[in-house]
Image 1 (cartoon, rainbow, N blue to C red):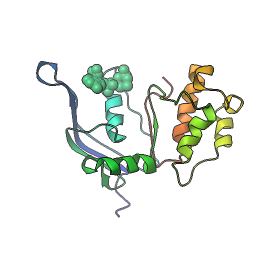
Image 2: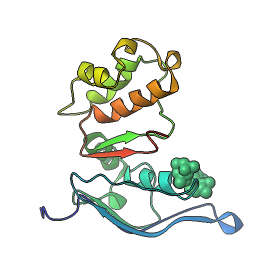
Image 3: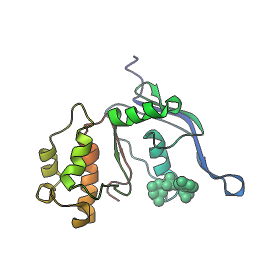
Length: 171
Ligand SMILES: Nc1ncnc2c1ncn2[C@@H]1O[C@H](COP(=O)(O)OP(=O)(O)OP(=O)(O)O)[C@@H](O)[C@H]1O
Ligand SMILES: [Mg+2]
């Protein structure tokens, strides 16, 4: 495999919602690339399509056109089962609205994704770095918004993922 290629390569990416009068073009031919080890920040007003873009790169929504290559693999042609495998293997995703599992403790929310990874980080070390160790046995509703947010970040980080997508993690 060519190692000089960007880790993420997006070409002419298109996405709309709705049809007819309600049709809204959100992404109209986006081109970008991100190298391995690179930190990339996306800025834009509310409603400009940031979450939509991340959902496409994260394999959570389908594109209308264009291609999304991640580590040499085109997500736009993958079957649903292969997309699931891509998300498990490659991806950490911090959602804009946390999406913690309410019936699991803070620690269990992080452990769930640690189990999906071949080389996870140590859960207790991570809980300490995030200032969540003393809250580890509480449920999400019993901790503050910022603590829930850090749990969501921990859940994405613990996989030690190739690609970490963060939707307003400090919003
Ligand atoms: N499932 C959907 N169906 C229809 N329209 C949608 C859907 N999801 C998003 N939109 C619309 O697409 C546009 C882009 O939304 P998106 O959530 O990507 O914006 P954003 O840049 O993440 O905004 P914010 O900063 O508020 O999170 C918005 O106008 C939104 O109303
Ligand atoms: Mg958003």
